[in-house]
Each structure stands twice: as structure tokens, then as C-alpha cells.
Amino acid sequence: MRMSELPPAQIPLHETADVVTARRAARELCEQLGFGKADQTRLATAVSELTRNVIQYANHGECVIENRSTATHRCIWVQVRDQGAGIANLEQALTDGYSTSGGLGAGLPGTRRLVDQFHIESTPQGTCITIVLTKPL
Ligand SMILES: Nc1ncnc2c1ncn2[C@@H]1O[C@H](COP(=O)(O)OP(=O)(O)OP(=O)(O)O)[C@@H](O)[C@H]1O
Ligand SMILES: [Mg+2]
Image (tube, rainbow, N blue to C red):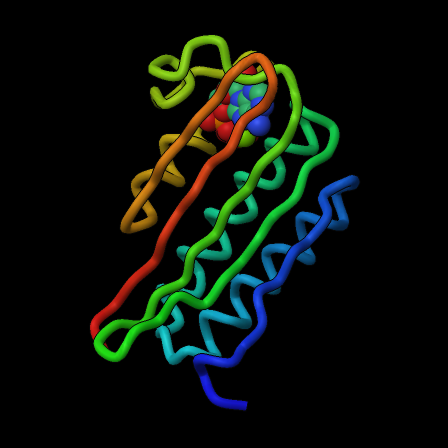
């Protein structure tokens, strides 16, 4: 299969085991596209944190992983979304140490630092986070 023909993965998130599935899928696509080990770990960690949040705060959702590589760049696009209650204060949630569950509060701010693009939308109807990892060919 050519690189550009790798199909997108759509991973339902219902339980903790699905976090592992999403994490692994992200790492595998990363490896198939020729990203190095450090990039594979960056993306796997980011996907792990975002999908873990979905299970923890929204119960269920989904993770879509797409190869968006071009003639000049390797590119992986990931969207993690749910229809939970949303994040009331985004600015706070993106601050190191802020957690409503007694966690470290490192998931969202850490993820933002790991990836090349980070976009978050959250309303009382749900949360949608898009991340991109990219590297010149
Ligand atoms: N998908 C989501 N839906 C609703 N609230 C969320 C979601 N993701 C994160 N949050 C809120 O944002 C806060 C910060 O998330 P973050 O992942 O940074 O920290 P944490 O999950 O509390 O702790 P850690 O990830 O370090 O274990 C959470 O405590 C929670 O209140
Ligand atoms: Mg978290």
C-alpha cells in the first residue's frame, strides 16, 4: 500500500482498553510514515492523554487518526471528540496543575506542548480536540 493510501482509523472510546488501542494506532501510523521514535512517542503520549480524558470526563467518544501527508511533509491529523459536559474554563484547563479530579492536571497543557498544532473547542454539548504532527520529508 502506498503511504497516501493508508486508511483513516476511527476508534470508538468506551473503556480504558480503547485508550491503548488509540495510542497504538497513532504510534503505528507514525512509524509507517517514517517519523522517528521520539515523534512516535510524542504522538502516542498526546493521544493517550486526550483519549484518557474522554473516558474519565465524558464516558465515551471517538478518536480519528488520519494521514494528511503531502508531497513535501509527513503529517498526521488526530481528532479526539466527545459529547460530554464540556470544559467550563478552557484557559484554566490548559494551565499546568489544574484538575477537577485530583489528577496532576498535566494532560492538556502537556499535550499542547508535544504537538505541532493544537486546537480545542468545548461547549456544554461536548469537546473536540484536534492535534497535528508534521515533519518535512
Ligand atoms: N474531554 C473532556 N471533557 C470534559 N472535561 C475535560 C475533558 N478533558 C479535560 N477536561 C477537564 O480539564 C481538566 C484538565 O485536564 P488534564 O488532562 O490537563 O488534567 P487531569 O485529567 O485532571 O489530570 P492528568 O491528565 O494530569 O491526570 C480536567 O481535570 C477536567 O476537568
Ligand atoms: Mg487528563
